[in-house]
Image (cartoon, rainbow, N blue to C red):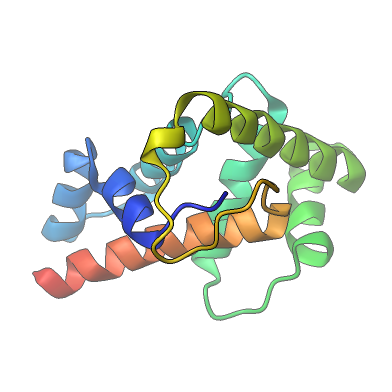
Length: 151
């Protein structure tokens, strides 16, 4: 079950007025980005007490900071995160997968009424780690770009 881009935009913009104000003022910084990523992950049901939550947040930041580069998750992003946290690449992958699975189960149980299917095909399968990271990063980049264009 994928969220539509429209739903992700609404979710990112909702209750993130300080984030939007920072973009509009031109003083958008890393703490604003961390806030919006954290809020998005929480709203998608990703439990913050999992190590994968922290790794996901870092992976999304890496993806946002390198939008034009093709960054294979297993070759570039996971090793960077593993090195920063002094854990194995496999540990990073497992923790991210586990967090996405936990969030996916929560979404199915509690938020089914919010799922929209206008752009993505409904599926009972959870997205792969790389798909999830790319979708969230791209959604945030598009929101940022749309806000900058609106100025």
